[in-house]
Length: 261
Length: 267
Image (cartoon, rainbow over all chains, first blue to last red; front, side, top):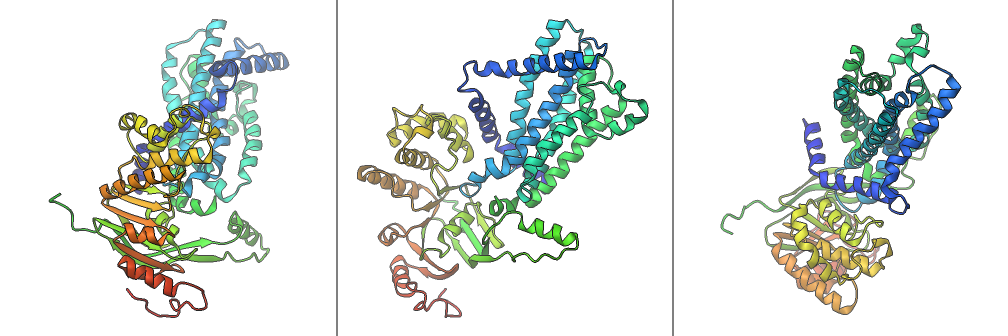
């Protein structure tokens, strides 16, 4: 119950979180010529480049590969931005505040995750442009997308609480996470479909929590069909587990942070 | 007010605060890992220093409490613990009412953002609703004398400008409990006078004030009760004049200090 009251306190600071999120966005684009337009341009360019490279490289007969790629990539980008910014959220971003003013520590990883979410919403808008441009058919299963996003954001919040807290004790994580993310990206079916893997290894891929979230996104956006039942169930279960365990660990250790950062 | 609660506004009981000395990062974890793999590498034990030891007091409504003591006596630590910035090792702090610490003015500033945006950020950090702040902005800007610069990012501000803005924002929030750490010195003589007047107004509106200062005349003038801290211990509590006298007599040079030798100080 202490956990719930701590989370409620974080919610009461939503104005500060909102402020950090908009700061993040402003600072990122304020000096550039095209400004906020980059939030749309960047994903479109990324999808284009990866499509050109991998569609030719893999030589697979893949209809609208760009859409398939984009659907997985939008989820991945949210995850990887969350993970990399979370590692520094307490030690760099929060640190300067801790000795000067009282703030609930968890607002920093939360703000980082929401900033990443905002970015991925732009990414989705860009993806929509790609979908329309290619004339990829969308189905009513797209209505499941908010469910996929919700599960995924809860998962990301949990991951960022875990990483923010652990990095206080092990600064190396900041660099380690970068490397691990790269490996993890290739182990998740984003650039290739699961069908490209022999079926006897599928169970290994399904042990990867990211598989289930990515699958939900791909099913809603690209395939336009019902996602696997396993992923429908696994996604929220993993999300809740990671979130509550992360919150428990974070709130258990947060008293220490002011001495350690 | 007729229904003034009888409970003290601030209650501090058996408060102990410890700080770690030296390099603080990761030593413990590395140590544990090394031990886990059988190598008994002996790392330097983490040394701690007791910044506050077993301090207890309470502050009633209407009190302006001063805290004096030599450098390192624990005055600022006390204030920060009251502001919930530093968690106590042992003991308890209860503050009944909203707390605004005037410590490190301009603490939450984001240098990339304009002065105006920082006003809203600081207000949010102190949990003031945006609607209320919208009404106050002009007053703050005028007081800080920054009309021309308020829409410029604060990274271009001079330290004086930053301090004025910080002071103007912090003193525009009406707290029930006000914590003040040496914030009277900002800007030129005229601005200083303006600040002091505003400070005194603010103190009168607050239910309780705790202030820390090295300026003894200021303490004597503004406070109606004073604590003397020495090496983390509360050694005297009483009338301002008596406290200042006690402080000057007993807290001077370490060798001559009679305070630490005494088993039970005056309380």
